[in-house]
Image (cartoon, rainbow, N blue to C red; front, side):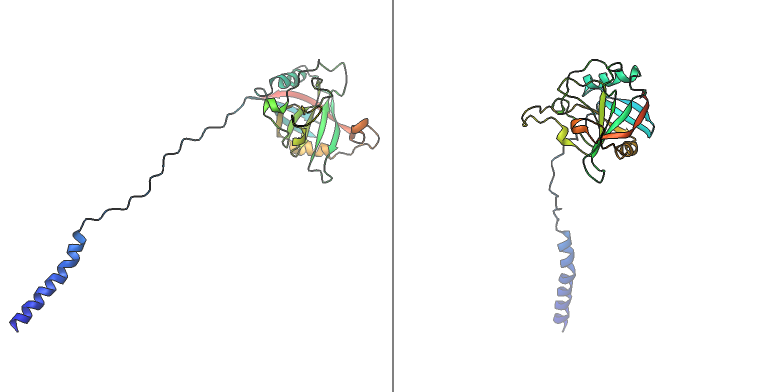
Length: 223
């Protein structure tokens, strides 16, 4: 009986000791897979722009002109602004590309008034400037490349078909984007949806002339 009791006591001692022994064994912590350090993001380049405030009879429009990316075209437009050659002109054309008014453009400026026009400028295609006819782009009206002077247009919706495209035959240089609208797209859309005359205009522009042109009261540099 004494031997049996001693044996049970010994077995109990071993059973109690076993968990302790198991816990005392060193554990190797799991090491998460190391990910290589990521290079810091490259900040997007900010190009210098000049703001121009246009006051129209339909409301204000604020432009940001690409002084750095389209220097020739921007300098030309600023000459018209600084010499007040756009004061008293008008937005006279509204081209509606879509029936719902979500795509199109408005055109304004000197409208061939030789007294208000300065000499034409060299063409800056979008393939050179890296700009595009996005919604609210400001671009120069022209005939042949290098004939742009004092008339410009503002797009409603993205009209990338107006960009330069070297793969196309003939005159594939597109139009010269030189800025974009930063405030006043509601004014631009009102002008685009103004009533047009079915008889005014020549050639492709017939039916696109605004019946009562929207006056450009002033155009000034803004801070």
